[in-house]
Image (cartoon, rainbow, N blue to C red; front, side, top):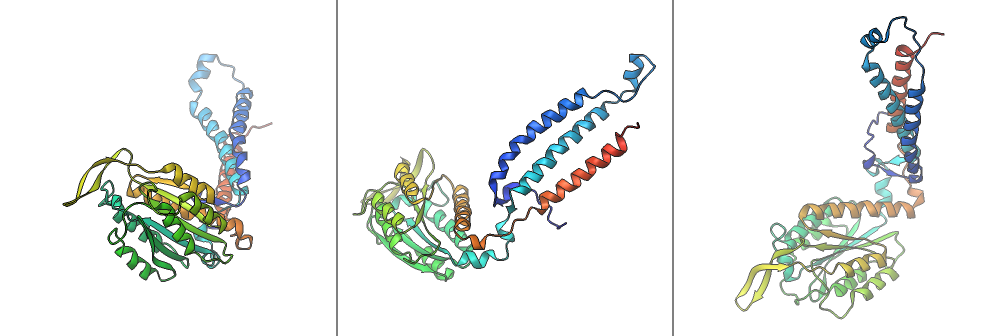
Length: 343
């Protein structure tokens, strides 16, 4: 047996997840076993009255046999999970080489003045930049670029493997010297144009905004169709808490802050994601934004696996089989030595 004993199934992906439907049989198995246990006749005969029999009876025996029955359910569940061929991406030696050849990512970030709202610490823009840098730090070998947009859009950094330059450009990003407004369609269209036209397995845009499209000549729906035509998946993120947030207001005397309702066009963002095979997320705080980036990474790994069958990682069901074997031995020995009967 191998030395892997981790059975935290939520940390695994599965190569044959259809087998997991068999887990619904486990409760039925337990019901049958418990009913059979109740029907069993006692193996010992007593000549004494019922009162004395009750005195020598021990409830721990009955409870312990219930534990043994439940253990059969665990054994069945572990074997079913093993049949689903579990694996962990971070344990695959060949994963990095295969994965790094197939990913192009463009981060399209809204830098309009509303991104200075203070429902994130210190504001939406700085929190978004911080989380994006953490995401970049976790990549290996992926080409990543940066497009920023407000009322217009420009490429802050073409897709590159030089993450230090990319992070330097990301740090410099702000809403100054760019036309006001929120041109989601223009930002998305610019991001699509920065991706390569070759047949790489995975091309991704992560589009982040805190508002709705109110500027630019390209409609978001048109840009989404363009992304779909180029086989680009778009993951859209709406940034902003629910309700009202302390938001910037431009006045003749500069920017002042007052509470205003958070208005994110979630319908349009959802439609963009659905059109391109991506997914829409809502981030109401920095922690949520971090989790969204992790979820996007996980989704992309799964999609890449489906497209690159030659790079399919080997299953690692050893931990589940190890525990199933140990539980089976313990249950068998307990039944044999404690509850066996003499014919």
